[in-house]
Length: 226
Length: 226
DNA sequence: TAGATTGTTAATCGATTAACAATC
DNA sequence: TAGATTGTTAATCGATTAACAATC
Image (cartoon, rainbow over the protein chains, first blue to last red):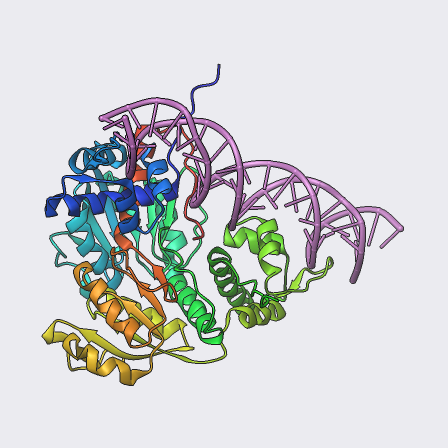
């Protein structure tokens, strides 16, 4: 008999659940005790059907009377998304982008521990950033194995991305957040999340051009939820 | 009779066409004269069917013998994506993220002219960044209308995003690249491209956790092309 | 020519939306 | 209770993949 396949949640649904989580957290701070799927949908910018469909993965339990209890729903979504185990991560590249990421990181990712930064520019090496040590990228090979990291964030120039990614994978990294435009060629077991800022710019430029050449047409608010 | 609808290209296709363009440009520099859909697909990380389907929008003309002429295909893709008119843009927020974006901007977006940066931190105001003047965000209202900008890039704190976006829209901005986690509530004619770095982090954390708890399963390389 | 690739149409797949019985 | 909302299934929609005649 084949082993039961996990019904693993789709990437899009995970993204929306993260959005719901953030919104529920904000609502709770504002003191909202209950919320209807319709309202959560409006704030998130998706349909109510979509919200209820997504919440089936959690699962969540609401009532026709009050909808969902904000706190209970937040806990449930957290339980669905939240890792129980802490994970170690490394950052490649301490330029402006790297530092911007690091800033978000410390504020929003309590489960991910940033252990080290690797940087090519010698002037940035040495003094810690946000309390994280910065090593020269030349020492990546020798240091990475000692860090026991599972997650890596790539904020290096495109030309170095593939080689560094391969080093990371051979050291046991299984998830990469890739901010370079490079399309990484890696073993299938490695999860790669691409965030291509250059592509975002190109896309917004395209639709802006469209909007200018056909000013009457109603452009969709695209990309609202990845 | 209803006016003929433009067959406007989907957001995903636009994204892939941008990727093809970048790859074709690199191939041309390396001296590759011809390319088959299969090879372009392999480099892009999509299927050959997908490539040919996408290229129908361009349109492109290849031969069974040689595939596509790299230079001709690049020109055709450019013609499909490329705006003929130049557009003005503004950047909101001159922190690390803003400066990182600005760096990409100057390197890759010849058609978009960055006219001004608005920043809340007084210590950053005054001296230009990459040749672009930096104004205090308090002067946004009075200055924005003079700039004749169509595109805005939001790299401000989440709490300020909605209000600033509304100001931008009332000043004629029709396309916004939103780097904040805020879900902007704006008129339907405004194109919004969200690039939520916090969400990228949350998603990679989720899948890393998945990979750790079920090490045997083969995780898909997700998000390879938005 | 024979064989591989193209452009395009048809089939499949997955994701979103609609519908609705159950229910508070 | 009556009415609105939930959880869930069915229908729709769009995007990806497969198939294949045309062709160099």
